[in-house]
Amino acid sequence: MSSVGAAFRLVRAGWVLVREGVVAAIPGDQLTGMPKFGWQMARLFTRRRALREGRSDRMAHAVARLGPSYVKLGQFLATRPDVVGNDIALDLALLQDKMGTFPQSQAVAAIESSLGRPVSDLYARLEEPVAAASIAQVHEAEVLRDGIPTKVAVKVIRPGVRKRFHHDLESYFLAARLQEKYIPSSRRLRPVEVTETLAQTTKIEMDLRLEGAALSELGENTKADPGFRVPAVDWERTGRDVLTMEWVDGIKMNDIAGLAAAGHDLKAIAANLIQSFLRHTLRDGFFHADMHPGNLFVEADGTIVAVDLGIAGRLGKKERRFLAEILYGFITRNYLRVAEVHFEAGYVPHKHDVAAFAQAIRAIGEPIHGQPAETISMAKLLTLLFEVTELFDMQTRPELVLLQKTMVVVEGVARTLDPAFNMWKTAEPVVGDWIRSNLGPRGMLDDAREGVGALVSLARQAPDLAARAERLSREIDLMAEHGLRFDDATAKAIGKAEARHTRSGRVALWVIALTLIFIAWKLI
Image (cartoon, rainbow, N blue to C red; front, side, top):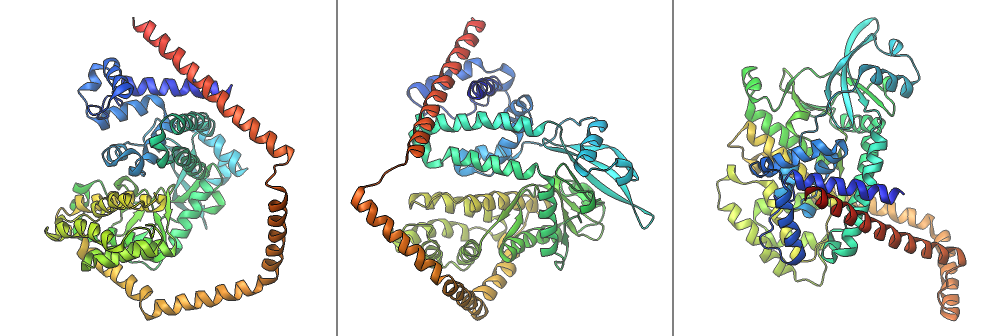
């Protein structure tokens, strides 16, 4: 029955997207056959009002009707331009995660249930909500510390949001499975895997203890950084459904007039923002992945404070080295080195020619170097780079795509503060310092130390590895003699899974077909 329910929810979502003009906004002039017929039918059923609006407005109206989980879906897909395309990703990034507030009594119940204490014991004062999003809302409150009232922000999970997301995720998985089954060209985008990533991201975001941990980690990483910080977490008043943190008094970064009126140096703030982001990415391998201006405040002394760390990105040492070397290679016009880094990282298969790949990289870099420095976009460069790498069979790297999306947003914020912002001049000190520290003699010494540690660890595991090798050898001999066999339980599980997928797909298609017939009959 869950498949039937998921199918109905999927049909409803499709109908809303058609009526609000989202489907009609997709370029369909070059489509052929049934896809073009479907696109033309979608235009017929689109509201007249929607046809006069831009694509981002149509999407905003559609997700407002579909509910909070679709806001999150849109924001998540905005981080995957490799899946939806750059233009649609930019439109999705404009979706505002603003929802109506829920009653104070429900917030109090959630806090007390999560922390196991009365609100009156936890807070001296708890005000009505000041902001609400799809997953949670924020209240202003006060706590007593050594008898002194201290203002805090209290983030509370929206009641019933987990159940709603669970039901909608069933629809997303059904759509992804149908897409993989009936649209072979989409399989390279791995829609089921993308949906699994969304499900995991959402689970993390709906446990506010994990957001608190992310704030704590970023706070430790940046405690000595000039001009950047995150709010401190009050762990005594934090649980799965509630996060209490320091209240931030500052001006939001999207209030350009307010920042200027307060006497802030907008150019210095833009430079600090970019350098802080690159420092977190390269030095720590951990960065705030939702740095839109609504999540950034500027305090009276010019310090940037980043809030709402529900989405964070991580890069391993290999990815950080890859990023730093390609950026530095473009800065110094060393295109061969940029190409070599792709091969060394294993991102481009060795069946391709390094020189040919370097030629493709040069086609990106040379036009950029012919422009004034303040017009060069690092985010655009990474976008072009990922487009070229597709020609050389580079597989989608979710962590790099998230980095690219965040860099697009951060660079956009910097340019609103300083229209003549020079990305390369600002980035060079951070990137160059990381290159010198990690790829010079000191970096080689660190790598050698890590190599010795790995060898020692391998030596300690040698007896266990030998025993495993012996067992594997015996299993291979038995397989060679008797062939590969499944036990009864495995064979039955495979049969049940195959039958379930076939039955679910057939039921979903029948539900969708009957619903469309019903809609057409109603319209006639």
